[in-house]
Length: 138
Image 1 (cartoon, helix red, strand yellow):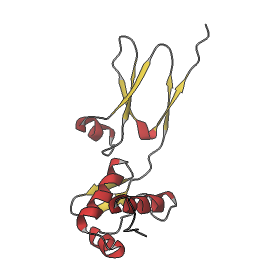
Image 2 (cartoon, rainbow, N blue to C red; image 1 turned 90 degrees about the vertical axis):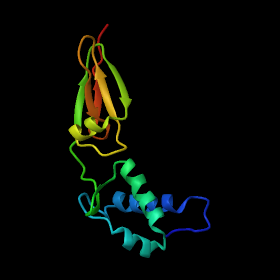
Image 3 (cartoon, rainbow, N blue to C red; image 1 turned 135 degrees about the vertical axis):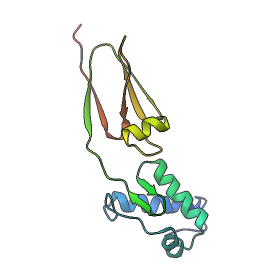
């Protein structure tokens, strides 16, 4: 429940509650979250606090929001193992809006960029990529 006497902002507390429900499987991938109005009533919060909580969860990549429909638990996509061999540089950054759309990743999810000499960098969604380095014998 929300502790109105806490130093932790109420929108963060609500995000914690919903995050815990997702982690425990009480809210399943693809399942709709309660409406903003329902969350306001259930937790005795204003619309701004509820929207801020949903924004936190969206930025963490846990939920997606569809205009005029509502918010849903983000489906878990298969994880890909990517082998990094030879000389390579791996960086992490936030994607551009175009990259987010192309890779089908929500706001708040970073990407890995794997660059090799004289080759274009490969952009991979960090939430569903495991990087594996091959040890090179010297």
